[in-house]
Amino acid sequence: MLYLSRDDPELTQLVSDEKNRLNNTLNLIAAENHSPQSILEIMGSDFNTKTIEGYPGKRFHAGCAYVDRVENLAIERGKSLFGAEYINVQPHSGTSANLAVYFSALHIGDRVLAMSLPHGGHLSHGHPASITSKCFDFSHYEVNPETGLIDYDKIRDLAHSVKPKMIVAGASSYPRLIDYRRIAGIAKEVSAFLLADMAHLAGLVAAKVIPSPIPHCDFVTFTCYKTMMGGRGGVILCKKIHGRKIDKAVFPGCQGTSAVSLMAAKALIFKLAVEEKFISIQKKTIENARAMAMAFMKKGYRIISNGTDNHLIVIDLTSKDITGKSAENCLESVGIILNRNMVPEDAKKTGKVSGIRIGNGAVSARGMGKSHMRQIVDLIDIALMSPAKKDMLTEVKDGVLKLCQAFPINGSV
Ligand code: DSN
Image 1 (tube, rainbow, N blue to C red):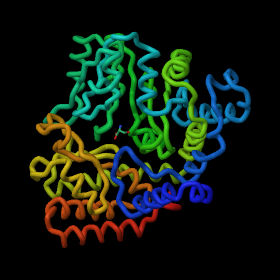
Image 2: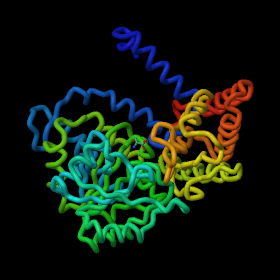
Image 3: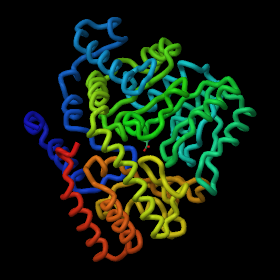
Image 4: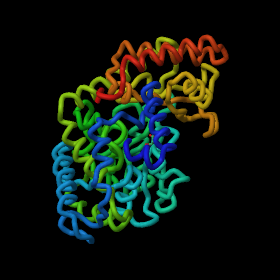
């Protein structure tokens, strides 16, 4: 921070405070992860200077010799890692990637069938607050409220009555594997495109610890900052036949210049993702999530779908008489960082909600294992059951700090 401390001591302090916060708290946000230090380096590299429009070899500004090589590296490595026919590495985010897919394949007003947000979907899957719902006519499928599982027969019924031009498979808080093959069959029956949004799952898919949607889908989108551990930004994978339209929809359709430093980070994580270290973090993430789900269930917590197959669990706190919002606040006060989350058929309003979502990516990247997950569950349980007992909360805070100090972030990934 040599130059930053000269130019802006206030921001320097904030960077240092954030580093301390990360080091001294347990990050259980399912949409976050710790990136390797080399990812942070490349994101702050000289590639930030370059403005680019267009694609390698077809740019609108001079001086693109090296950035063309960066984008081509990201393209070649990404295609090889995921076994994809075509890739676009320019999207700024997951929502930008989804928008580009919609605009590449649909006309304004076309019908789309996607998972509803309270049941696990995502804002960019046609939530009323998202521009996606203003441009396209979304209908939503839900999970079975008893089992918490996607009801594929219902998707099929809905697909036949709605006749969508696209079906979206993918979620931000669904803890189970998605049967992409089955949804692809339904999409075929109604002549719809299939988009899988694997933003949360990309690292697990890259490491081949869960099945890939890619063979079954026309389009697959993801972000690089969750299980993928690759800094910021989004990616689109698709069948070759859709490639030209996807490129046009990304630039100039939905974006102007892309961030070369982020494309370089994508190239880097696609390289690191075939290495044993990355793969073992992804394996550990799943084992840890399962261990955590089991430990919560033993303590009588209601886990949506009674477990998990991926990096996250969703807990319905209704029977514990605590809202998701109060749980989030109470846990933050002791250094455990997670987010409140709606549960299927949530009776509470958006602000408070009935549940919390817990992701295991970041603690697994720090090197913690199953016994530490059980320790974390004990700490969470004590805090949630004694929110007014200051001495108990202090004990939990000490326990969190000890665990954090035993697993420093620097050097862990
Ligand atoms: N999609 C949001 C989440 O899952 O929290 C942010 O990436």
